[in-house]
Image: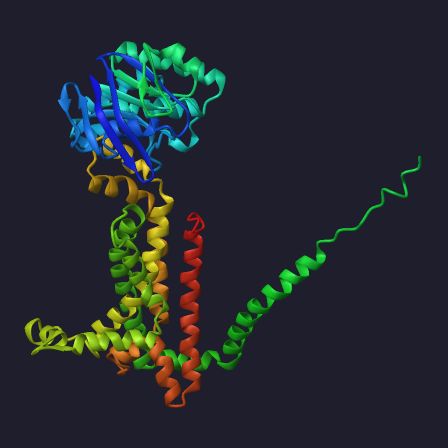
Length: 212
Length: 277
């Protein structure tokens, strides 16, 4: 479902060489490794935000190496969430749907569905500036899941949360997975998080190779 | 053991430091206040009214308001995409563009006016820009009102570009990245995500461009001339009134410009309070 074949990435001084990775459909894989080893770069490469120097990126059996991010239909939640500051929660959830010209009733139905799965129905008319860490996480997750992507990429999504909220988010992520069956690649430093969520643990080592 | 002789309070006063800061800063603030006070004391309400009732001054005020507004709009129109390009993209020769954009800021104003004049009148073979605009498009520029706007725009736009670049530098590009993964093209990410966050910077850039245009004199004098009722703006009115010995009128116009500048700067401060430039 997600496959990197001998991918090399060069970003200034930083580079990753001959990276290979395969995550099966419906699998929840957690990628771990030290800071600065390129975990975020791998996610951004799958999204199409970083160019590939050589090798290929495959999603759902299709070579998408040269596709634009807009065409890949990947759900991406970056570490800082990057919720759009000028939009309310409902508009965040509707964002990708509007770009695809969804009709209003279908859009309302999808927003209601997401709100129900993520427990954010009471936040829909709120600005994002007043949301708590856990609420922001769930809104970012909802925004990424709105178009029912086949692949969800999470970049250290729980790193800024306290222990209690993190536990709560584990339950939400499990629920999302159960409800959507989305193939997920989740990057984290936290072994406990990996134990709680992963079907498979992957480790990026000092040479940039992925083990697992 | 008695420690009272060893543990004594050494007084550390911040007063000398504040006196130092206050006296140096106060000198400049005082200079500005004295300049404005001298202008106000020099003129009288009657002289101010007389100056404002002159048809030439009224025409200059009208042209000033129109040309400054046109220059500010044009500056914003150019500065927004250029500021975005400089803030977001790395490409060969970016430093050259970055340096070129700053040239109008550091160039002596008269030189800029002279350069505009030369550009429009330089003959390339038989072809000349001014002649082409005049004969082919029926739109002569030099020594007419379009020259006023162009002279103001040439300087004001450079300031607007700087402001817009800082604005876009402060907006996390991650928002646009995420928007692109959600289905936006780069253009849609710019219009729907970056631009709505840049509104404070845009107002600041436009206001700054307007204020710069108001104070522009050198390039206008050289490129547009100072013809009464045609290319006269308030800054050239001061010059013209002085040149015919009408000191009262020159001061009255100056005060009018001060009031306009203060209003614009207040707006700039009010809007800019949310832009940490």
